[in-house]
Image 1 (cartoon, rainbow, N blue to C red):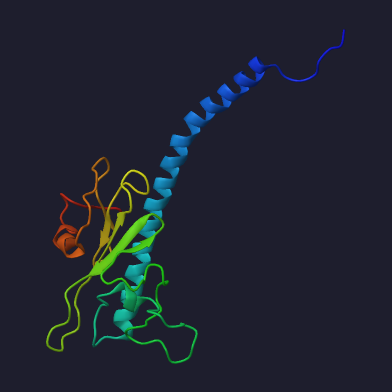
Image 2: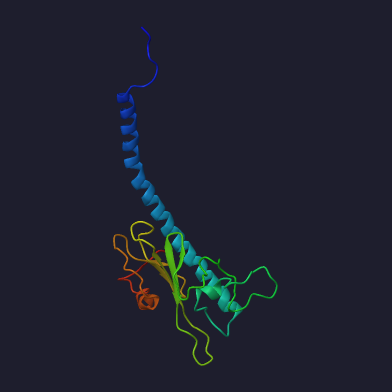
Amino acid sequence: MRKQKGFSLIELLIVVAIILIIAAIAIPSLLRSRIAANDSAAASTLRTVNTAEITYLSSYPTIGYSQSLKFLGPNTVVCTAPGVVDNQHACLIDATVGCANDPGPCPKSGFNYFMNGTPPGAGLPAADYLVSASPLSVGFTGDKNFCSEPDAVIRKTPDGVTPPPLAAPGETFAKCGDPAQYVSIQ
């Protein structure tokens, strides 16, 4: 009698069941890791925007803070070309965050970024701004809303609190400094 080589159907089913059990354990951890990475990237992006705002204010003191992400970014110009950098093409942030949607959303790494503030009045420079980030899909791409103002403190919605949607960035402006809505992460 010849002995057959190979695996039986039962052995293959056991291996498939083991793989499915491992996947059921690993996938939620992977998703939580991705959410944590996106949340960290959003906070880092807001730090970058804060730094860009300080540079913008130093470069254009008569204008004050930029009121638009697109003005902080390239705004459709090639930043390496000579003579293109000005107050509407500052080239201080990348074109993804500094997109042409004004006041937003500018999507990047699972978050939408918004900016607004108080426009300069009667020749006065703009004295403030608000930059905020909200997840594209709460619980899937991120868990928190983030915001920052000229004090450069990054704030987030508290842990365990589902962030409200940022339908209108101006609506969030008064809430960014409100400790009942946002807590500092710095």
